[in-house]
Length: 592
Ligand SMILES: Nc1ncnc2c1ncn2[C@@H]1O[C@H](COP(=O)(O)OP(=O)(O)OP(=O)(O)O)[C@@H](O)[C@H]1O
Ligand SMILES: [Mg+2]
Image (cartoon, rainbow, N blue to C red; front, side, top):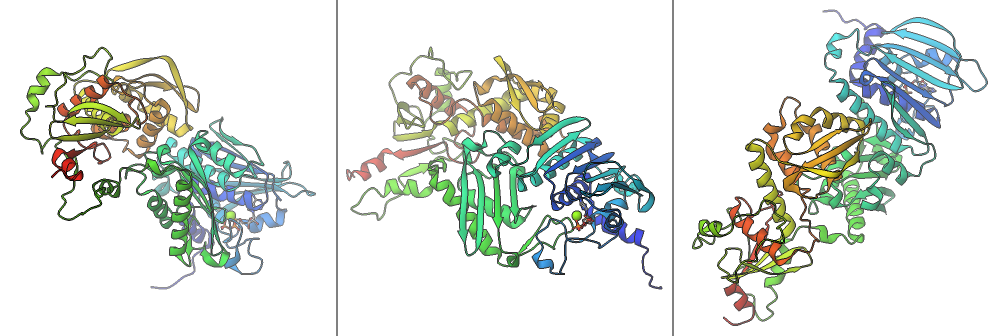
């Protein structure tokens, strides 16, 4: 076997395998080049998710004709003047992107420096096929057509237009968030889908690209430690999402997708959120160049820290401090120490005390075998909706129900009930959510969930890929009682919601469903994912924590819990009720 040096077109194509994985990665490289060129505005045009065309136009410094030829050669870069790769502050530094892209597509590079003339070069899958003068304003325009058209092995790995476009949009959002001073526009198949002006503040830019509700539902993060600085915004736990896609992380203004950082975010929210909920965060980490190596990943999306634990600690404490300062500690689920604090209320002696409060476990009434549920069901048919109608007759004053009779409400959140054998506390929201889930599942399995038409259809704004996903599943969602239709490129019109939800939080519901659809396998029908869809919907049902309930409503909820399977735990696995047994009550007061 003889060793040979590979010809440059092959070398480039091999590099392209790493640098250009899909249209979004080519687009990211081109936008990064525009940023490095000092652009104040960057205009992007795509067609067919970027597979047919990616065009990036900037008003940056431009290149002279000679530089353009060099730019298309491998390892030619203007960004490492002194060989000190560890000090690089530009997005690019390898001189690989343009030649790599040009080896797997038709690439036209047009550029003009401020006081010069424009020039154009065209490279067709690695071969220079034309050059000459070009008319354009100062700056650079790069057009990439037919990506992977001559590399069928790669082309066939491209996903649907919709999926490729979603990846492009995500890449642009992250870069636009990293550089709020630059204006960005993105056009897909002739439609403007993103536009932010130059000169935004960082928080305004994050809100514009994520959710306009974010400022009202987030806290600012700002923490400096040992020369490292963490800034940004952290969404409140109550503003969480169903997928982790809404986490934007930047290291020295470079968007990164780093497992260490993502893990630290999860850690910071761990006891504030259920495992299947994810916070919306945009975190900007500034570290000295010597602390981080950006040259560890072919697409430059991962970095390596000299002291990962320091970074992790900074993120966890930065987020915790911000969330705690916001006074939302109450959003935490009832913690074990709160429960033990209650039983520890006895100051004389703690020995020999069994835990006074038993968190409920499923099945809900395993601990109360003496009570026949069937009897109670005969007396009290569960109401059709958890929100009991006021006409619902108050239950008789006896306490033989397993969950007792409602005596009042605490903090508009907990129902206090008296049972034959003790005191019961119910988390009304957690319990209601579970009941709604079970009702949704039953209805969906029996031919469809009844839809409740809205008096006024509600418009919910979302980004385009999210709308595409919802639109594609609209008929399936209708079977769950959710009627929605496309309303322009970036909004959905909701006409009816699932009846079991009552007047829930419609925008939250639609957003969460859109997120969830992104994670679904396209081949699976929503029916096959019944549990997940119903659970997502149930999260947005009407009886929220913080709503005052009438005694009749409270009793209706208790009765429905008694007749519903799994009602002892909420959809996130937390208890929906706890009990202080009468004997334990007596012990607490030294009566026994
Ligand atoms: N939009 C642009 N405006 C001005 N100069 C550009 C532009 N795009 C590329 N260049 C020049 O072409 C060179 C090569 O670009 P290329 O993207 O291939 O490599 P790089 O950005 O230096 O490094 P990397 O491979 O890490 O992106 C750049 O160093 C820069 O000098
Ligand atoms: Mg580059």
